[in-house]
Image (tube, rainbow, N blue to C red; front, top):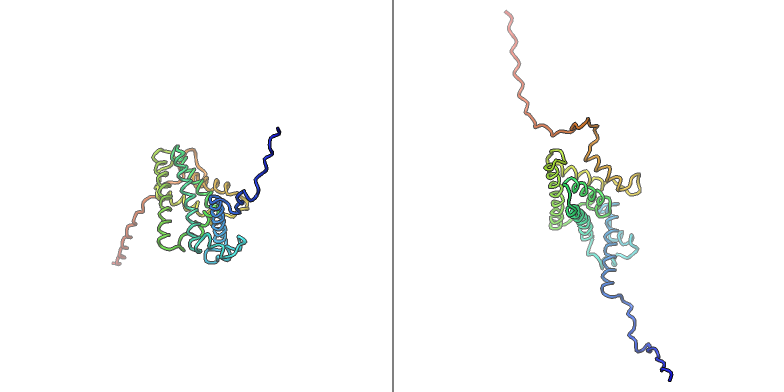
Amino acid sequence: MPSPTVSPPRSADRPPASPWAPASHREQQREAKRNAVLQAAAQLFNERGFHATSLDDIAARLNVTKPTLYYYVKNKDEILLQCVSKGLQMMLEGIDASRAAGGKAVDQLMTCMQVYARIVTEDFGKCLIRVGDEQLPPESRAELRRHKSAIDREFRRLVAEGVQEGSLEPCDPKMTAFVIAGALSWIGRWYQPGGEYTAEQVAEQCIATLCQGVLRRADGAVVAKAPAKRVRKAAPAAAAAPRKRA
């Protein structure tokens, strides 16, 4: 006998397809949109400044209404805090990765410098440098400055270890770390994408200049030396009184 034909279930027997995505997908979409808000804000802060940028400007950049932003952020202060925090977090993660890679201190230092120089050419890194944390409430500012101190300490440690292992010239680790971070941070102020050099080329040239200098070196001669201590000049001797004529 032929097998009985099985009829497909009626639509009434099937659960209706939900027009809503699963919770995990909704959370991913929300996070992606929140990141888009932060990135658009960072770009505008970098272009116009924090005070000259409004929530309306950010909404217009994203083609949404201003009330839509409140689904993802509380206010402009929170946006700046998150933008600056992202820039700092990117730096800390890059430094941690260079430390985990191991190797000589000078190699780790070079990697840290490359990471730092790259990040300050990106939206959140530029926001960290151009806008800074001065606009934030004191408690948020204190937290961010603790993170900045961690970056400074890592540069100092690597410089000190580089001197100890003989790969760096003897120097003051604190002053050298300030010079490195200051020079690389300044890239974030003047670099503009689409210019004569790529971000990678800018980073490479700046790091080479920091490490090698610009003066021509003689064979093995050290051009730059540690500054000598100041010597207080002696007071000029009193002028001798003129002799009286006899």
